[in-house]
Image 1 (cartoon, rainbow, N blue to C red):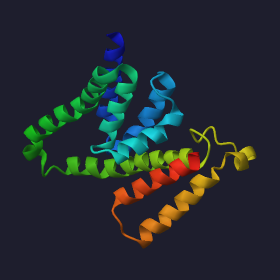
Image 2 (tube, rainbow, N blue to C red):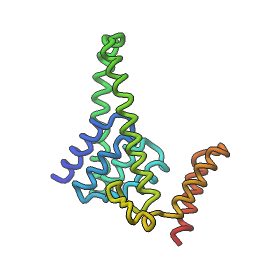
Image 3 (cartoon, helix red, strand yellow):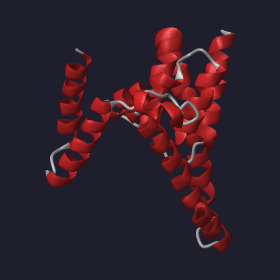
Length: 190
């Protein structure tokens, strides 16, 4: 029971402080991986891939996945509720006072200041995922320049370049590229 309360509390904190959507939860998830044995940092890119290829918001899918890994269905419910509860409460409170502060210049300034911070968090998370996906390294700290050649995933780099080119050249539905990447990943694993 105490484990479930810890799970709810940790995802409550993530839901409260990860402003900017699912990718903004990644720095918090890396911290969570270091703090608890629920998942490892090397599993986060896989969690992102699964979360992005299933319906629903990225953060909610990752919370559900983590909770299920920890305690099955009840854990997935607890983690998901913990993550979305702060947002629900904040949205209800904001909707009550929005009209009063709609034209307040300080509120505009606050949102103006939040935009670059959110972009920085999302950019840092995206860069961390890129490093973890292209190199056989879970984090940027584990990336060692002296043995970089042995850490480079040649297949991953090729797939990255090919998909970057293909998505810009041919405007197909993202599901097509997700399915294609899954097939190529299975082929590389054989």
